[in-house]
Amino acid sequence: MSEAVWILGINMTKFGKHPDIDTVDLAAQAAMAALADGGVTMADMQIMASGNLLPTGTPGMAQNIQKQIGQTGIPVYNVSNACATGATAIRTVMMAIKAGEADFGLATGVEKIAGMGLLAGNSVDKGDGTWTPKGRVGAVTALDGRLGTETMPGVFAQIGQEYAYRHNVKADFELFAKISEKNHAHSVLNPLAAYQKRFTLEEIMNDVMIAYPNTRPMCSGNCDGAAAAVLVSDAKLKTLSMEQQRRAVKISASILTSDPFEEACQVLPDPNALTRRAAQQAYEQAGIGPGDLDLVELHDCFATAELVHYDNLGLCEPGGAVDLFNSGATWRDGRIPVNVSGGLQSKGHPIAATGIANVWEICHHLRGEAGERQIENAKVGLAHVFGLGGACGVHILERSGL
Amino acid sequence: MATKIPMVDYLVLEPEPHLVANECTSCGARFFDHRSGCAKCSGSDFKKVSIDTDGVLRTFTIVSMAAPGIDVPFVASIVECGGTSVRANVLNTLADPEHIKLGMPVKLVTYSLGTDTEGTEAVGFGFEPKEGN
Image (cartoon, each protein chain N blue to C red):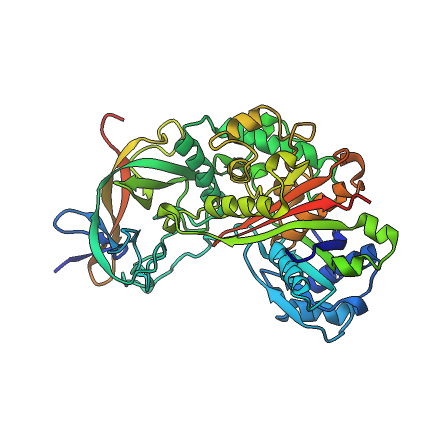
């Protein structure tokens, strides 16, 4: 087992709308702040990995950021892995440190997508007036809306409902709305969340229906945001100041999976098998179990997704996600607080930034710096992201103990 | 001479409308599109198989917001037909949660997408609740 890798500095920008700043500057802001948080500079970095899923300018986000904060000539990786892009950036840097190629590295994720609306299923085939078979299944017309839905709210609605069917549990509209109620209630304590508004259950259920059972507040918002992390090797950390060592957060597990074949995965993306696999491997690598976690940030891109990930991350027995939620365990004063940041439904989901922002939230609590929303005496936390396609990132993080 | 064309190539219209899949001869995994190798076992030999036209509703959503040009609301679903999952819309019933129930029996139906400038009619498919439901 090679030596541990640590998070030395980490930052997320305010999520929401940043109309007066471009994508590169937003990422540079997070990168500079993460470096300052770690007490290091760009001159110390020996590797950099940058995520940006929906590029808005010149390709090569890592190089674009370097031009703003320091062109030091180090190797860079521009990474893309759906909603797991940020986690992939962290993991790319971590692997370089584990491989002995670097002692310090910088991971960034940024997105400017405020107001972009539905991110998939936007294609309407105008056609040429004749029914002409095209593509992999010889379709004579665009299939979105004719053969199911390609929209994310609809895909994840089905994923949540499928859980109810498979386990024969009462996961209905009201239950999913209650999950959203929890996360919006949590967001009130997070000044960096895009939306900090508490909703009543009735307000959530009576809001605009997007794809039953997901109403508008039950969907993650497209917004602008960036996050960045500085990683350091165990050997190098030992040479740094006591304050840096005390605030450093140990990466006890870093796992990335893609989706193994499941029967229905060709017709409905499966976020379950790869998340279960990632969680299992992460617990093994960290040498802990789900019962040891003090808090979890999981990928609630929709209220219907949060439910299935309780189960996938082993926070309950198989089929027990509804009971777990109804017990109150996942509220911030419960046994295993989930998404005390407000989750993606409140915090917003600037795609490539999300996988680092979730880690930032956990680090914030492990360092005892989360202010009003601090989970008292948090020692171990788990950050999870899932991207359709699919890719799943799970990080288990532990406070230094110094 | 008017002719018909299926909306997708895995819908077969004659003699009775049904779906066909490419089944891996090694492990039995089924795919509606072609695969160079099987996603389950990496085998490379496939045969055509017919899919049951009866199934049960494994999951659904009622889509109220979609791209311009797509009629809403509609019911998107996954139907399990004899062990093979199919993506389709639920048709011929009201698009509300009182009429669409998880686990309800459904059957394959076809409908016309209209006739093009050359007189060819495109035929789509979906599933409707079986009688008595």
